[in-house]
Structures are given as C-alpha cells and as structure tokens.
Image (cartoon, rainbow, N blue to C red; front, side, top):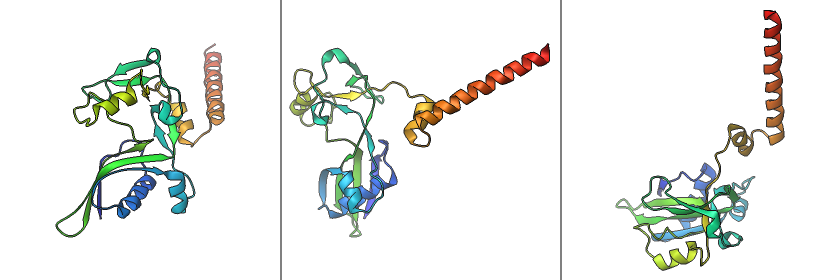
Length: 198
C-alpha cells in the first residue's frame, strides 16, 4: 500500500500516521472519512503514550455552549478567499483523529491511498463559502450563531517560553526559574561593569 498526505500540517507525528496506515489497511477501496479515538487505538497498538493532537474547534460538538456572535471575529485563514468564524481561545488537546481521503487499486495491484487532510478533533463541515463545500445547509447549521454556533480557535501568539512549556521539555516552573536566574545574572554583570568603571 502506498500512502500520501496532501495536508499533514496539523501537528501530525509518525505515530499518528501509523494509526492512519493501520486503519486504512482495513478499509475497502473508495472515498473515506474516519474519526478514531486515539486512546483506544494507542492501547491496541501497545503504544506507551496517547499522542494527543491540537484541536481548534469550539462549540457543542466539543461539549461547549454555542459561541455567541459577540465573541467572534470573521477572518481569512491561510490565504483562503473566505472568512472563518474565529474566537479568541487557545487550541486544546484531543485524542480524536479525523482523516479524509481515497483508496484506489493501482495498475500494479497495490493500493494507492491519498489522505486529503488529517487533524485533531471531530469531523467538522467546510465553511459554507468554500467553493468545495457540498452541503451548504449542514455547514450553515454547524457554524451559524443562531444554530449550533461553532467557531475555530484564534489563539494569542505563543511566547518562546510558553512554547517550551507546551513542548514538555521544560515545565512552567523550570522556565520561571531559568528566567529569574537570567535576570539575576544580567543585573549582577551590569553591577560589576558599573563598579569596574568607577
């Protein structure tokens, strides 16, 4: 089986791609939409950790209240022609992995798999203004504020220190201690330089 990803820029790691590979192996040829519980899948694959993915969805599908219009802003993302409904909230971690693609039999008898997208979170419809949106009514019901009122996260920029903490390499406490130590060193050097100049 040959597997190719069109978009794998949603925080996917090799472990996620392995899960996708194993699931796609079970599928018949044709178009597919799959949502996996990675916690259960990780146990099936005897993985030591549950590889959570970032998820930007907010709203009833994630167990939240509908996001009111007063909290959202409509912005274009990633150079797209349409604007998405965004809320100033951080990305969250999820153990749900959703992927969409096709599986076809190649001329050589091997299966060719094309994964259009794979991301953390449940299946969410395309924006109603997306020319590829095939069900505008469903999309409007999902995203519109007077219906289910879902929105996507528009997180504040992350500092380098927050990124380090998020990576798991250092805890927030360790980063705070390093920062304090760096400030003390800078102050001590400045004082020593000032004393040497007098």
